[in-house]
Image (cartoon, rainbow, N blue to C red):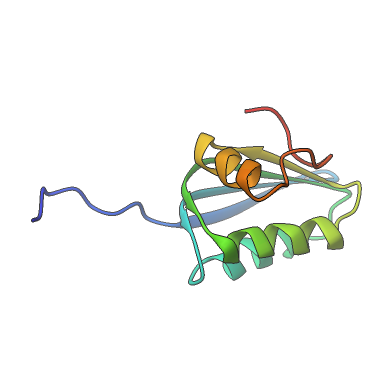
Amino acid sequence: MDHGVAPPVFSATAEIDGDDLFVVVTGEVDMATADTMFQTALREPAARVTLDLRAVTFFDSAAIHALVRLAQRLPDALSVLPSRQVRRVLDVSGLSEQPWLRPE
């Protein structure tokens, strides 16, 4: 049954500001899009990377894997701003106490 509601469109955009890279991700992060999120966060060399996931509506195991890989590649440089959905997935997966995870 089509109610005329389009599925959330995925996007990952990056903006550099001095030594800081801000990556804004929207929509669903899944097997088809997780690598794009990962690659976008590594596109520009930066001392600090903020991954803004506050507009993410779905986050699966592929997304978790990409996020853990980013944390390994960017130790002490990554900050993640989660949406409620992302926070819930990270809570369930045991990653809610990671130093890179910021309050909602």
